[in-house]
Length: 176
Image 1 (tube, rainbow, N blue to C red):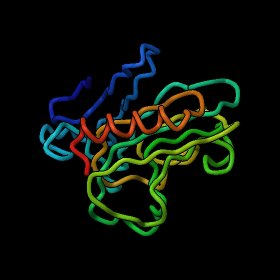
Image 2 (image 1 turned 120 degrees about the horizontal axis):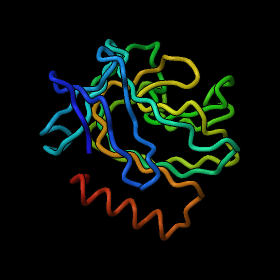
Image 3 (image 1 turned 30 degrees about the vertical axis):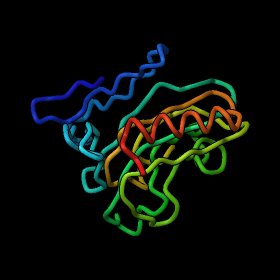
């Protein structure tokens, strides 16, 4: 569930886990665009590096955690080279880089492609200064594309759980 402003830009993406970890953007200029018929004709959020679009969430934990993250996205056009390893979902300790000490669910290099899903597992990592669509703790490596769903589990899932979730996401978002 989302809330949009008068221009259709997303100010709030509600957390459905029941933990009230809603993703929000208070600055209108940095809000992603809601697209009713986006990823595979289904609703999604469109992010673009030129507008530095991103959403921010409350810290997931004050301690290090293990996490499994799934994302459903599409990025058919390459972003700027400076935005390599575009971030889908990211967190850090608020000081060190996400890829060293935190969660860095990113698209490798300058990879592009159509609708798909990714899964990332992180062990014993910080989960503060949480963002969707850009780097933590710095504001860079912006994602350019459409994001439809992010699932974050605060543990490592087993193979059966992963298979079940991947099948669910593939069916829900019409992924091949």
